[in-house]
Length: 303
Ligand code: GDP
Image (cartoon, rainbow, N blue to C red; front, side, top):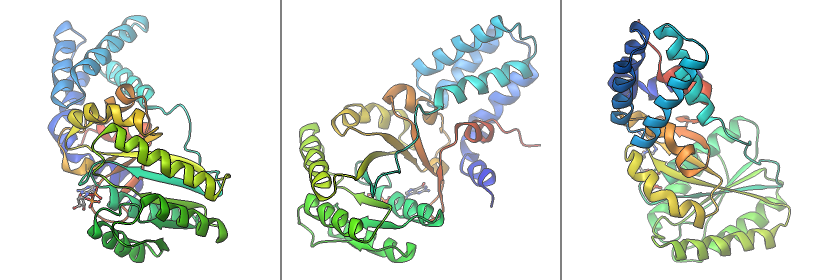
């Protein structure tokens, strides 16, 4: 399956449920006050969040007015442009470190371990040298799981016993990755750090040891959110984003929700770009997030 087909398949439920009909509704209709009202309602149902739904409709009204748009088809294109602009990242991920250390954080069950495996696969395919670090030492099962994925992806892994200090695991991984000329170290972290203070302390320590192991290492911190829980996940993530110094978002399980509208509001609400989306359980089911392709797949009208 090509990139666009796979993304389209991942978004099928969301499109069938809402965005396909939004597309048809705007395309077929005239631009009336009722149309705006219906659109806002549909966007809320799609889990964009009420505030973002209202913002989108306001922006659309403004653009229709400014550009003297007359047809539904033009309004639809304008809406797609607005969403695309909202999702455009302000900068690229920094992968220029030697190595770049990617800390993957998020509560248990959101798809952290699977996403690390998928990232390992994706970067390996791009020709990068990847290493994993089993930093979720609280769960023996998490270490085993990551080990299995490492074998499947064909990449080395640094692991300690369960109960070990996560910072020690990551220190070892960065030291080893530096010696071996690795490009990327993907680090699992504990998902049970419920309090902001715990998380800050733990990640602060991890960042310090990375710097000690190799001052030339770059650090990216990706927060994993489950799109099935949508707006709830986004609201709960707010304080963690700040505490963890997160630099981007991985949205998993887009294929498992009919309300993929949450994707639209992530950047506006958390101030962080979506970097990757998960569209299935397989190792190649993680895609680099491309706002243009995302919007096209979302509003695709099947014939
Ligand atoms: P962790 O506890 O955060 O490490 O979560 P896991 O990586 O173990 O994932 C939890 C469950 O979610 C597993 O059954 C995964 O197969 C599933 N999962 C993860 N990402 C996706 C995705 O993008 N789509 C679907 N359908 N399932 C996913």
